[in-house]
Amino acid sequence: MSNKPNKSIFLADDDADDCMLFEDALREVSTSAELVTANDGVELINLMETTVPPPPDVIFLDLNMPRKNGFECLEQIRNTKEWEGIPVVIFSTSGQEEMVRKVHQQGANFFIRKPGSFPKLKQAIKQVLDIDWKKHNWAPAAENFYYQY
Image (tube, rainbow, N blue to C red; front, side, top):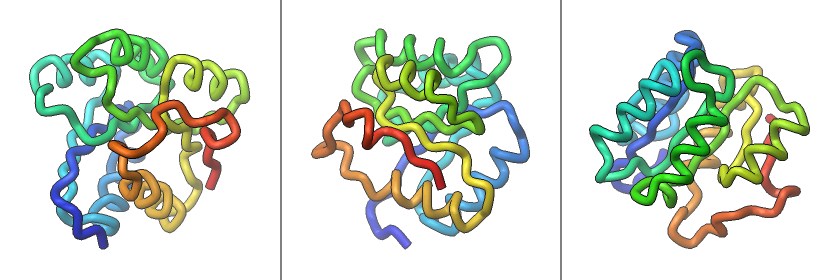
């Protein structure tokens, strides 16, 4: 259990089952975290425009979404002054090297391939929540960027 103050987490993912699993895993890792979900990139950007500030502590961003995909969202987040410092963790089923390299270059903080089991999902979420983003190196080296559980 994390006993840090409430964390605000945004999750953008068009897969309802993945969102439910993520929420269940998050509740087991941190009962105080607040999760806000968006079903696609357009919804995420609308959410950002209406709720930031205060910024979320971290955004988990799926890449393959309708209307506006994760690459487009990441680009917009990194090019919007009020949002550019928000940590973005790419959370995708695909771990293709080219995709990982592209989002690293676009300024994502980490790339986590969606774990195949609930315990590994909890481990991935906990790892991200335990990062002190104020001290963390904002541009991790490529070899420290991709996590596969």
